[in-house]
Image (tube, rainbow, N blue to C red; front, side):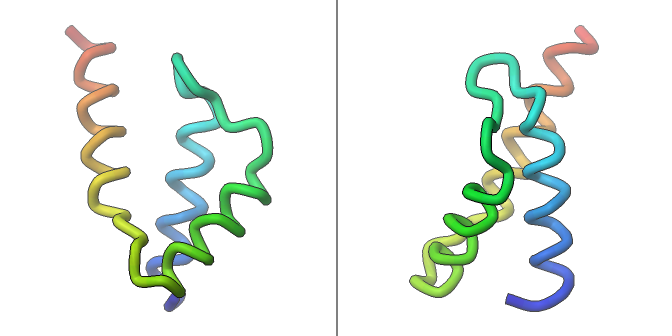
Length: 61
């Protein structure tokens, strides 16, 4: 994973620490899981970003 993807992972984790339904309890564990998914070719950062965007839009409405 490159610098940009790693930075996105950190931003996604930081944003989801305050998730209304399933807040992240162990940011380091989530980063390890994201790294493993990346190595397996299963990391989908775009889906995480879309979910964050939808959740933020709901709060504004």
